[in-house]
Image (cartoon, rainbow, N blue to C red):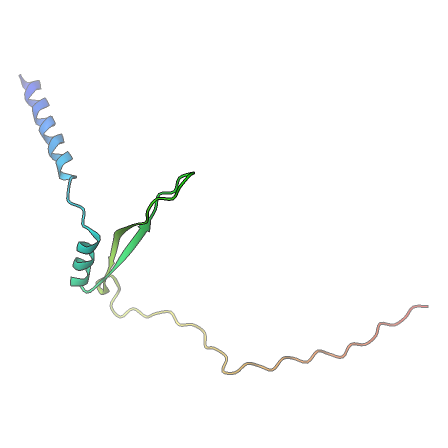
Length: 103
């Protein structure tokens, strides 16, 4: 009797865990609207299936929502070295001297 209750409890727990994974996946439009509402920009991932004989359709899927909250406040961006103000004139080649002849 105890084993039957345990098996029933385990079965219900596994069924509940299985159903918990069956959430509605957001569509591209829903994800974009939610990300825009947060003040972010939605990254879109494009994929296609490639086989030996054909290439499948391009499928757009929602990626990560890039929002200002993901960046550190007051972070200093790296600076590039300064560009030269003007191009330097080409260096003149040294006059070539003929090689001495060995007789």
